Amino acid sequence: VGSRLKTSRSMEGLGVNLDAKSSLREVIGTKLGLKYLKRFSASEHSDENVRFLEEAHAFHQSSIQKIQEIMLQARSIYDRYINTTGERPVNLSSGAFNAVQNSFLNGGNVEEMLSNLERCEKEVQYMVERDTFKRFKQDIAWDKCTRMAAISKLVALDEVPLDVEVQGAVMTSHANAQGRNVFVKVHLVSNGKTETQKTSACNASKCAWFQILRFKSAPLKNASLIFELGTGVIMCRTIGKAVLPLHKFQESGSLSEVFHLEFTKDKDGKVKLGCQLDVAISYCQEILDQIRNQNKEIVSGANKEENKQQHMEKIEEDSKIK
Image (tube, rainbow, N blue to C red; front, side, top):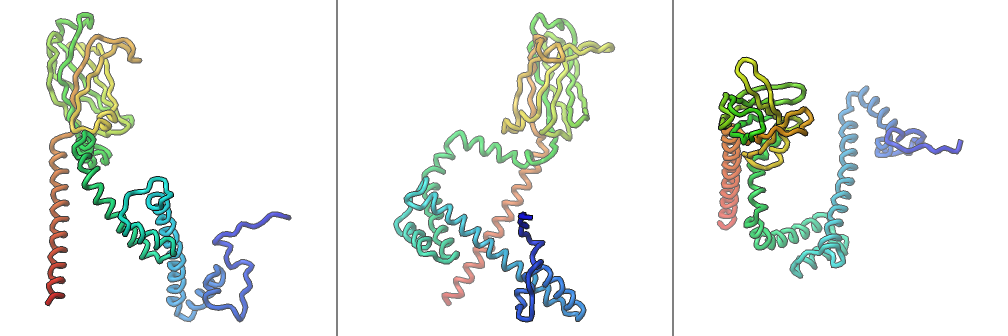
């Protein structure tokens, strides 16, 4: 007692009085009325008409809601950037400003408001293209933008082929490996799975491998490369370890990046071995070429479609002149 029922779509038609004076729209607007009307029309093999009215009614209601949402979004843009009392008003010509202001103040229709907003958009775009955009292309931010664009498709992939070039290492005298032959094991660890590759051995006094190890399927997220410095031929043992999370390579925004890794003696990575390894991580050239070719095909297709459209528009204009 005293509690109130919450109205929901499923409650429509419950407790609504339908009588002989109820219109068709009123009946269709209730859940129970529509249910029984569809059942009856189906018995007469004419339920397609009622079903059409049902879907058309739902579409009409959703269209009204979408128009209201568009009006709210348009109003938000106007209040923030065009109204003189807005947070950050943009520079507009008096013609564009007056037109869009009148359409909002006079409660113009949606088409008029959107048309005037588009006029403002074109004016601001023209200003940005001549000023801000030119300076942007001369800034270092543009260089990073183009690099990230080049790998944007790679970043979207779950797994990519990677080349891991084990270059060289600087070994100090206290590394306890002087005079020995050393090698590097590289483990790709992801989701409990491990793939391991190994360099050839070289003398610790030089530590110059410059050997590329290819991993055909490397996740860039939630994966790490573990580098183990080993010694020995028959009885091999690990004398140092270094870890590189692959997300660091992804976040670098480069097609290739060199990392300087410090080997440690212990599992916790606190006791340094006295050996720094240089490793270059890069995307395989084959997949880069594949993506570039795909981009060329997309651009070529878009250009052809644009040329075709321009040709059709020219034919249409010529026919009007004639």
